[in-house]
Image (cartoon, one colour):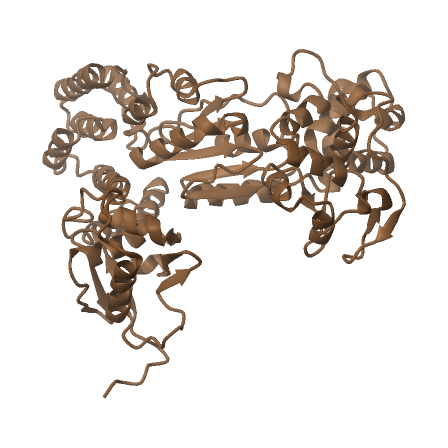
Length: 603
């Protein structure tokens, strides 16, 4: 007789740090044959994402194998459900679920050994950073004990497993390095020399391993042996990768030559330029972005032109303490993203694969600024780097998402009015120290400019010659007024130019819909979009950050600046004085409670 389902079913744990296995309530369950285990392993490697059935079948059986039908795949999934959740009622939610066209494994991260291990390494690194070496050693030894053999043992040739194996192997090497660094911190440098020597032999391209070995020898009073380790590492890096040692090895080498002490954790390299002006507001966004970068290896800042994505990214990067970075790569005006990244990092030019080989040993944050006009090249580059460089994190600024696995989107909104007014006042004082920003007038100017930082800074720049009241009056022709000199980057030189870069990415139907929406000065909903015949194009406008939140459920709007640009460009040319466009007219009621231009309703 079948047991009644428990209100608290036994917990399920899946293990991939060794042969693929699972336990239920602490007891190992039978997962079936190799193919069925591969189905489970592919879902674990997807890390919670839905895998379409056809894609899952391709991953498990191979692109050229037509012997497996959807029914075969469904049979394996059903077998896994019976093994993992024997008491699960039919059609009830559970761990292995069907969602839309595919399947997903809905298992908390703490119940997958690979994710527990990754969290352990991150926690131990934080412990070591704050001087708690004893706790770091204990934490790392617990994490390393999770390994029962090579990751995804027996499935190493499966295409879905290769990126995960590379990620986990890199994390394992990092954990070993952290443990040995903690032991050096505890004064046990003599005891770790053997383990460090073995680690350098096993991973000759990992500079951190050579750095720690040289450091341990230096502390043991063996400077000659320490310099020999550094010379061998320099020769290996030059012969195999064509690069010089990174800052960590150079730092230890200088300490050995000078006979001075050196800490186990390197001083962070700063390759993000110091800002020329203060950073105003965005405290919550900075904290949220810092947390996102700690939790995800790929974070993309999205938002409309001029909203401050680049400045927020730079400020967040400057506050990090990555041993080999962070590094800022400006993609504006570039053609080949991989070449620009290599040049910015001082590496020889090459393909994304070659660049990944050079970056694999580095622990750094790579900031790719202004990526939206190069997505065709940025997307494969980012995918290659993330799969091959386990200690690399990437922060992207773009007006639209990259739409790649593991991407975490972080939307950047216009400033709150108080922060916008503070920014305007500060930038006014920078160009005209005697200028006074009347709070009421400043708030009106900022609201008229959608509280966009770029527009506010350009408006403040005009206060060198105009009063704030004159600037407010001149906003009737905002695109003619808001321009700066040639010292600013071209993409931030004029407000019209910033919006034009987004406008140029639109296809014909998207432009047509944007022109029509520019007549709706009080916002709109999806019913309005359908009436305008632009449902498909609307998704493109949202994706490219040209549509803003309308302040209510399922309500949308265009920023004033976008709406004016769209209205004027719809009449055959860029915005300028005297240019017309779709008029803002009295509206007829729509089902969404808004109003519609009568001329457009009848189109």
